[in-house]
Image (cartoon, rainbow, N blue to C red):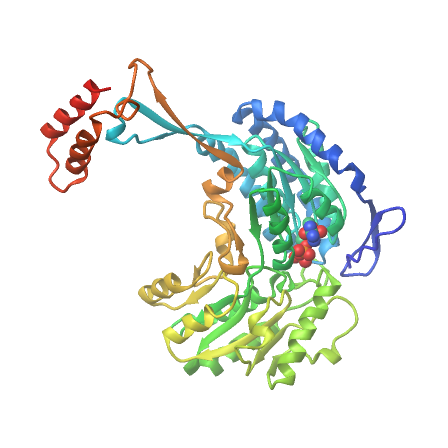
Length: 516
Ligand code: ADP
């Protein structure tokens, strides 16, 4: 599992979820060392923030090459630690991390360099620009479902801007946390620039209270709210990447075969432990039966296991299995129908859950309203476009969604109406794989965005700078005000009015200059 008992000796015992075998022990970071981490991070900040972006990016190149050289090993570590199949470790955890590093190597210098800004005409004689100044120490707290990507992408984004980083990876996947620490160390990042603290929520809380300059958190809504409260006490800016309950809307004119394959993959990839997985499937009523048949036959082809050719791996976190079970039990007790899968009482021991499709569910059931994070897909019919939008928007979440139709206009119209951080048309999840697009949620799915240009800039203070040559002894708006009010009144009424008269403007402006 990655059940990790915290023992007297403060070690995290790592048990592979798919096999139940103990595979490692990792020393927990003692809480009393938290100030030391911050001290080392602050010491390293002076040098790291002073070197140029291209110099920083040289370290990124080493890191990327090391990851390319050791890709298979990293994939196996991820798979052992999470129970996910190797293909998903490489496609959905390693590839997006490498692509993010690549994207940053190509774009960071331009995005983080001084940007020219326009200066309004009324501020004649001045120049304006924006600078991006690193914040200091960025605390990244990461989850267990994509333990490489969701830790490393914010880390490299923060590092590019000149920040130092402390990572607190999930205690559920500490082996990947150790692997990340090792990768940064061997890439030669200067001491203190990247530090990794191991342990559970107490360690996370101690680091949150240690006054970092920014907190980047990915995890549950519950913990996100706790972290935001602590951050508010110290006025620390945050990004919160939280849960999802992503709707998939299939209209009758969609490519149904493709949509059925996408629904199976979108719902069951990573055993459904994906914040952007398809968690609710809305199907136009007239094709419900036909679509269900396509979906069920696709699901029946899927294999679960640990070997290289299996399609779906195990669950990662035992507590998550209970959540999935609870939601299914409630739905079945209220009349839902199993289309695939088994009643929870017939589930086997261990961390594999049958791939479950359910119909006859109500909009107020937990299976529709709460994040499942497991291989459980409720299917709901709808009659009109408006109804589909209302149902899709009817939860507290808003991370991703997908719309399926061959009618481009309809797809775009529906996409625009969804209260969601992202929408995919005729595909699922995939926006996250384009690092040029912003990533983040609406409503309880989170606060802020990363990836793309904004994903580098959030880790920097945006500094507005205006330059004046300093040749004039005064400015028109400075003291004394004597006689200036009527001149300003004329100037602004003319300047902002519909029929601006430049001759009057020049006359009033010169009069103001004279009265300085
Ligand atoms: P998930 O179950 O999705 O991993 P959690 O929110 O429980 O979600 O955990 C995400 C990360 O947050 C983990 O690294 C965990 O150790 C950390 N964490 C949990 N509780 C706290 C807390 N109170 N303060 C700081 N970090 C926490």
